[in-house]
Amino acid sequence: MARARKIQPAEVSLWLGILLDAAFDPTTRTLNLARSAELANKAAQAHGMTNALILSARDGRSQLLALASDFVNYPEEYSDRHRAELLLDWANRWIQPEDWLRLQTRLRKRREYAKRPGRTK
Image 1: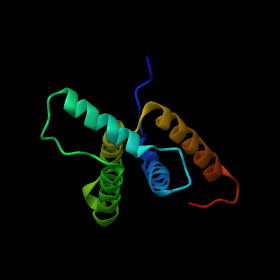
Image 2: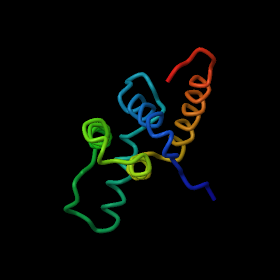
Image 3: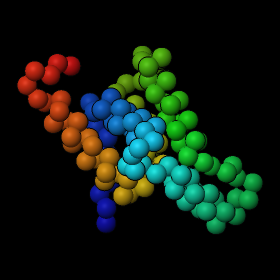
């Protein structure tokens, strides 16, 4: 059984940067939002939701941008813990297991980069 996904509240900014980069970089294969949308659409049909909205990769990117916008424009409304919960909810909806593993690798690299001597926050 796969481990439960987790986003540490102290790492929300790192995760947000990684997710935005993966979602909008046309050269990366780290995140396949189109596949996630396709699977969500099939699941809705399988559950008899014939009038459900048809999702696309654009919906995933739009939802992620909306979260980022809220985090930036209304920081007092979102604690780090709440931001982590919201990002994790988005991730659980839009990120496939193999994509999650690739994103975790990116997170580890960013952590290492942030720890290098001479780096300031």
